[in-house]
Image (tube, rainbow, N blue to C red):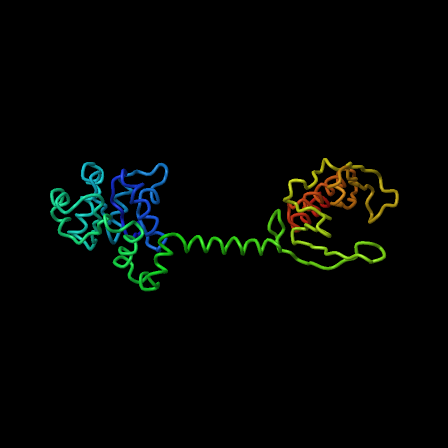
Length: 305
């Protein structure tokens, strides 16, 4: 099913900058569903087909009549489609005179010259949008005062909302990991020295990122500085103590400052290969590349291999 639009904007491209684009933007900001080529056409679309769909799906047709409109064939094609719907169905045409008078419009289209029109000689795009809103979406028009409609149509209300959103984001950022936006899970005071004379805050986030006094204790897996497996010296050797019934153990010794902040636990296996694979899986989990469930499944699979 074709999308429904409140209005279809029929115009000459030469009038975009001076009037049509500001009109379409103001209408959209007011909540009107607008078919306008810069909003509605995408790369690869058939222009004529999409225009026909827009005309067929619109309740009102806005026709911006100007000297450029009168002298160009393509706007006339759109107008014929709107006029046919106006005659045969329930679409209403809303004319806007842009740089033309009644005589020029009458010479171009007697039927359009007989309709009450908006004349841009007396109103700007914002005022025209508010007047059009009253006809095409009276429900939206009646929800707001005149002053509110002017703020919305001008984009001032949207800018205010964007500022509020940015302010809220700034407030929320204090409780999110700066690298992945994971929420803060705990913020507790902790001693900064063995004598407990100086205290600071330790913050821990759900991603594993942890700081103390603003210094990183454990990096976030999304931090570009998170250590690679190559940042560890891997040493595997037989486990003489035969801990947990395993014959081999592999340890990862950090070679960089950031690697020292991510401890990889000793991995045990019946063979050196098994211990290495377990250590690798442990790193993938610490780096956030696999979930805890996937990590356990890998360990079980290695064990049963």
